[in-house]
Amino acid sequence: MKFNPIAFLINLALTLSVGYLGMLFTQEAVNTWYTTLAKPTFNPPNWIFAPVWTLIFILMALAASIIWQKRTSITHFPRTSAVYLIQLVLNVLWSFLFFYRHEIGMALIEILILLAVVIVNARVFYKIDKTAGLLFLPYILWLAFATVLNYNIFILN
Image (cartoon, rainbow, N blue to C red; front, side):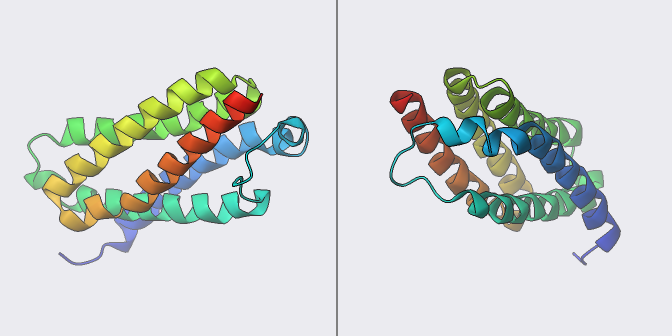
């Protein structure tokens, strides 16, 4: 399969738009409310989050573009797309709950659901194209870390 830059750019625009929406919910709280929280010793510095999420969104867009290119041969393409879109919505919802609403406990429940849906998404993509599925591994690992971080912040606060 040949790389399709148009498919990639469309998927990149979609995923980065989702990331931007999440940032809108996050931006103000990072420098205000979030600074007042007790955090575990392994909490990374704030500056690390933007580049990590940007990379994850780029990898998601690449995976989605690979799947998009194979859409005509995927009998369950609408369901495959739905799983992808659901995890994007859940991604934004976490930022809304944690940073905008300051609902640390609800965000913890939500991130567990998000992690499960992302694992399902990776598995669905993997069955269609191994590379597309594997591109979700950094996302899964980061979400697992974020879940542990969310849990510890919940316990400490």
